[in-house]
Image 1 (cartoon, rainbow, N blue to C red):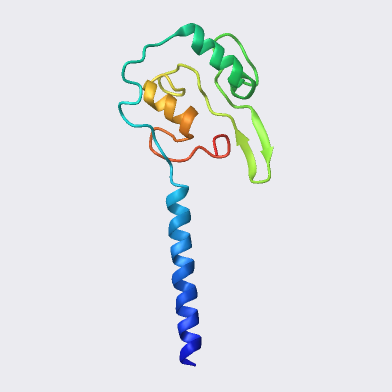
Image 2: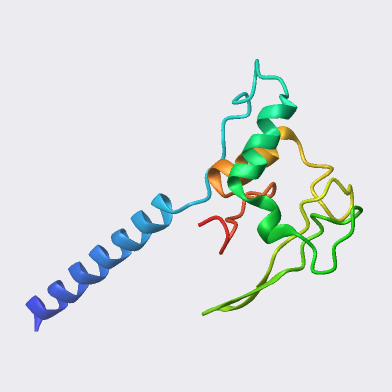
Length: 124
């Protein structure tokens, strides 16, 4: 009986260690605060990245006009339910107009929101 308890205890301990390691490895990550130091905006490269990443294909508003081209709302059926593309327009309230360059870089490069959460399912 004592050896069975020992085996169960060790299994629980190992399971806990594996869970902790999994949480550590998959935690949201962010760029260093000074990661963009010394860089400057380049509209031509930004337009190239925007086109290469296909941002508009998902973030385009269902009923588009020039004013809300990136207002989001397009729906995607997934195994986890319906995902609606968010607004990535320059709108300060509903879009990403109030985000810093570092916030945008963290979203695109690390899949992490400005408040430090994972962006699922779009940025796993």
